[in-house]
Image 1 (cartoon, rainbow, N blue to C red):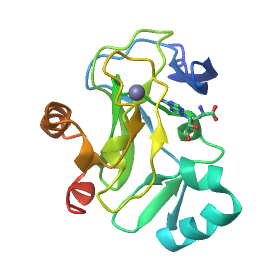
Image 2 (cartoon, rainbow, N blue to C red):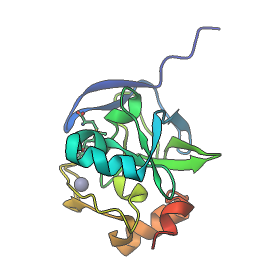
Image 3 (cartoon, rainbow, N blue to C red):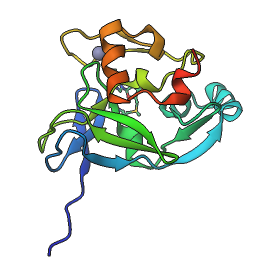
Image 4 (cartoon, rainbow, N blue to C red):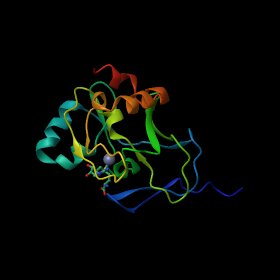
Length: 165
Ligand SMILES: C[S@@+](CC[C@H](N)C(=O)[O-])C[C@H]1O[C@@H](n2cnc3c(N)ncnc32)[C@H](O)[C@@H]1O
Ligand SMILES: [Zn+2]
């Protein structure tokens, strides 16, 4: 049997470079596991002063640690206010799963707010271009009620993020 083709490719997209699906993914399918180096939040604070871009790319991993995806696919995962994927914390790993059907050639995006705790201060001006774009990406507890309900129903907001409220 031929080897399974790589799930994702890095390509120019609306917001710089992004992750583009190389095959279809059914809703709920695992797209990839996010790899990287896990660092304490104290380290992230030092990066804010020296390398803000690196700090901005880090993804909350648990109560006081962040995943630095530098050099890995996760470094190219863009945000959308109407994402087709979400990050789930499963057995100590961050797993990117489709939350609706994804076709080959679609950019794979997730909503950064699902991993921004009530104690996270980072915000981003959003250029996702979706109707209903929130304009600014902020901590999960500022999400519109209907969006928050949907993510909660999907299990897309990890327990360690919910506990920050
Ligand atoms: C993890 S990187 C993603 C890869 C990045 N697009 C690139 O070309 O290197 C996250 C950064 O991409 C940009 N970005 C991602 N999604 C965006 C969006 N919806 N609107 C504006 N900028 C976005 C922001 O600069 C953000 O800090
Ligand atoms: Zn948006």
